Length: 309
Image (tube, rainbow, N blue to C red; front, side, top):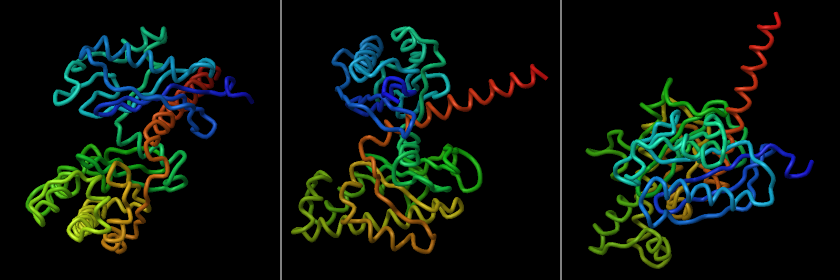
């Protein structure tokens, strides 16, 4: 089967400063060429939608028609409705019906445009084609300026149920007199180093320094300890088999992963680093799109059988 005959969808990963896009193919959630651009200089909803449209046209060039689009977005966001509720970033999108706007630009039906939480997209990508493939109970954790989380059972993201905190979020759970994000984030890692040395350094710089700077190495060790202890408390009832780590800090796993895993051994959960890295959310957006399409087809088939009966 040639690529242009395969089921495919446009997938987007909307980040804090850039947006990436690609075509995702349904066979194994593989991606076509990934393209990325910064947010438009003109901070308007119209400019943002135009950017998404142009990026999608570029990503799909020469690959044949696509069935629709799936976008991984940060929150707060009404994912079912395609409406942003963010005020702290991308404020010009607040209250805008992005589903209708994108559907109009691509000349699609609104149902062909889907949205999902960025952390959920990360985990779904790892389930579909990465480090959590074939795992029944998995958690995805993204480590960056904050800590994102997503929970999945049998390949489906869940936001409620036994062991799942409200909304599937752990960043604001109590931890050592504050919240988890105070210690398990770039902010916490930088604060740990500054406490030791009085100097403020970027995390990428600390990672490079760790082989020769004992304070940087210690800061990462402490970060790993906090990560393990916090996850052990937050995830004990959910009892995941695998916890997949993504985000910028996860690119230096040798500096903190052993300390974190030590705290999680009693939980029976294995820490794994993302296999898809920056492409995880793109693949996960494809997983969500094709899973939704399959569910819709099943409902249509069931309704046809009832009507035929």
